[in-house]
Length: 631
Image 1 (cartoon, rainbow, N blue to C red):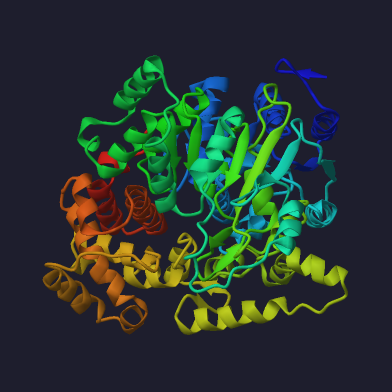
Image 2: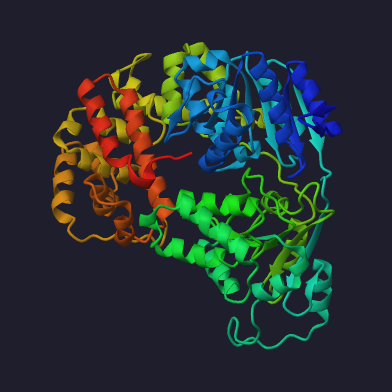
């Protein structure tokens, strides 16, 4: 079968046949095998039939990339995008959105959903995500019966269970298509400081033979593996992506390599300068991160992570696609759905910090990243090389990680106050328990014969909501209705804004307060506290009138946001924010955009015209400069 000048592989044909039968499909296939072509077929088919398709992505960066790609492919008039930050052409037949937005539209009974035929869930294994996995489950549970799903993922060992779960709750056929063979085979190696690039088994054997030196301190007797030496040894296997889970180390290593190697001629350097000048506005070219990036780029080397300015990331992605960049140091976000393979993938380490502890990545994470090695139609083999330190690395663990992707999809279902309120609003009592029993964990536990107490969590939340005045009998109060449209920190946000408290604060104060509610701290975050006392006392004096808010708002977060969000709300330039905290530029942008998203939710949640106007004014203070989305 030929589609878009490609001869489809048998697994792609199987998936297409399922689509033609009006079935849902779960595609479990190795990274780089061409799952996206199946999504293209669905879009092409239903676009011709004048039906609507929703493409959901796990991260906003991927939404933006898909928007750019689809515009070129299907025409700007046929593509829309809806994220928490931006809405463009929402009436388009092909809508790209984050999974959160799709789930929120389902709960809000948005009329757009009535016309949707197919929903494409890219990277469906994100259902395993502890923080956000519930979103994926609820997106499937609350989808109306007429919608079909295309679920795309790297290898899922329990794909049959997952498909059976969907089939059991949605009452239509769900086919499973599996394909583990890669178009470009992967060759797995490690880089050891003593014997260079080799198989992990050789390092394990060699370590057994090598007499150990007595340790005096952690690294005073043998240097760690040298990334520059490794890059020298794979000079014939470029381009390479070096995955490093530390943003700081990505930049540091890229600059170290740029002082030793130069992969560009004068024509290549001219392309870098031309594209950089097109994408990076003059006022941002003096930022330290941009200057560091340009220094590396001038040698055909780059770094890429979520802390960069959006336009800086786009610059790197375009230059990498054009073959200008020969060595790219990147964090794992570069591998999520972005179709930018290299000949070689290097792991600077197989350990990552997960927010609480350092741990080894699991096999699914390993293959998600390693799968970027090997370019279809260009390379006969893709190389995955992990840097190991035999004196400190758990070599047997490394061997197990690289054998196969054996992590099953697991349920992370947790019931939120928002979900409880929407259940009460949209479903009679007899339906609620039935819906709550639809989650994937309940299905798996029942299959094992285990007892599941799903109603206990629901009943506890209902009891609290009644005590706080969100529910009276079986009906939502005004506060309850408001909270159905707030999708995170719903109780605290409702307590602040579903009252007259907001009228006692300025737009800047409200922006600070919202930022304090949604800000998620990291261990080494720093914010200037200079000249914050007056604003802090004013805000807290007003907030203290409501005991729930006073008790539950993080007062340190309020103080931290006063200069960063307050100064930007009052008109300072974005580049001036860099000196007020130690957050990367991309993190500041993300925080401000999340504030805007929450302000938009509040605006949609209320019928109070004064509050609607005030939220609009709050957003206007923030939606400017580089915070504005550009596609």
